[in-house]
Image 1 (cartoon, chains in turn purple, blue):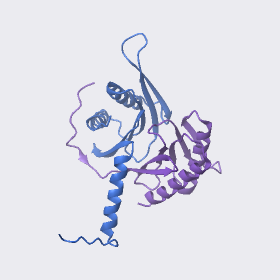
Image 2: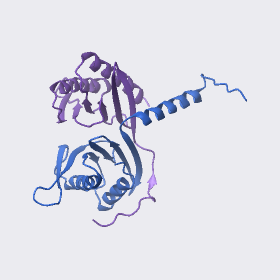
Image 3: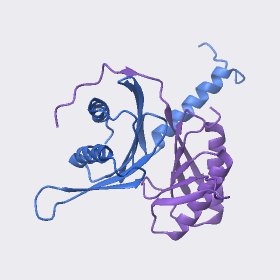
Length: 133
Length: 145
């Protein structure tokens, strides 16, 4: 490949995307959150939530006219079926509430209903704050 | 010593507190990230990078969408000393060779210093060679792996 020229002379612009991060604790477990949010109201969002710093799953959910509930497709599957189920229902509820296409990377090693509920509530609270800005 | 009065009803105090909290989260969050936004050939281009323990997640967007998602990884060559690369389109346009070329250039660069995979989300409206070169330049000059 030809040598690439230095790009210092390119104009910087106000970013159209921002990355929001959050850390929370559920009992003894530290849970990490990260959100990619575009400026446009209708733009898709990306959410990563995990108790370890890895990227091991990815699903996409969106509303389509032919179905009552948003459809979900797993692009990168976790070996844990439970993780897939939690992530399915969570991403569908995010799409219903916030009306945006949602890419979700959800990887929590423990399958505790109260933890899943806590994570969902945290995501909803954070998105309500982030999507208002 | 002058006393320092902090007026907690002052909006700038809230902003300062929020900034401090954000800085504190940034320091203790395990994922390092960076956003670079430039005008390339008159098109607003946003590049976001996040460094996971096993993956480099790169987003390149010129229209505030994620669109095509590609996963790439490097493995040792079986017969030759040259490594081999696996490029898979997970979602979106798998006919456009340009996106595979982006992924291949990026995973080769990542593979020089680590065994991490690449997760690329790419949505470019300007598919010119010049834009391709400039986007890759920006990424390589600002890489976080």
